[in-house]
Image 1 (cartoon, one colour):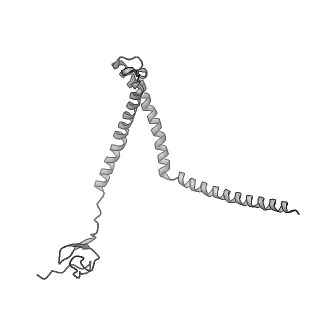
Image 2: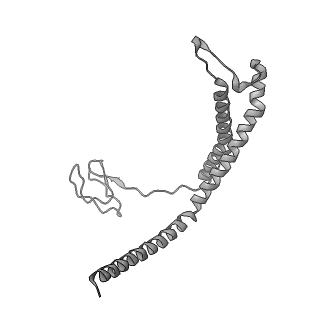
Image 3: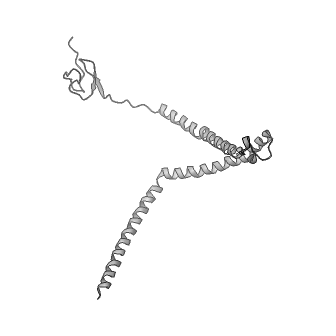
Length: 175
């Protein structure tokens, strides 16, 4: 056997080994990708984006078919998109921008009044009905100097007095 044949066989074996590792890595990555896609918040986000895009198209058509003709009638312009304004020799076409701006305002208003406000109201109602947890105190007063010290402290950081353990009631200070 020639040396060239052995080198080629070793090269093919290492390529196969590399390909096998790459294949297994790809399969593992697909498993992670599947876990990522099947998480609830990713699916909810995708549904929200699709519905938002459909709603945006609906609002754009409403602005183009109803609002712009009304504005054209008020401004006395035949085509609102071709409306021109030419101060100082420059020509501006504000009709399209006004249409996009109206689309944005209507979309934002609908989202605010029909999504944000109801969710905030539900959260407020839920938070009012849910009982508040009483948090355990983390500090206490030193009975000698009346400064605030951590609950587990055995000496006061200010007057260096020996403090009773936190679970025992503080004794009366001799006066």
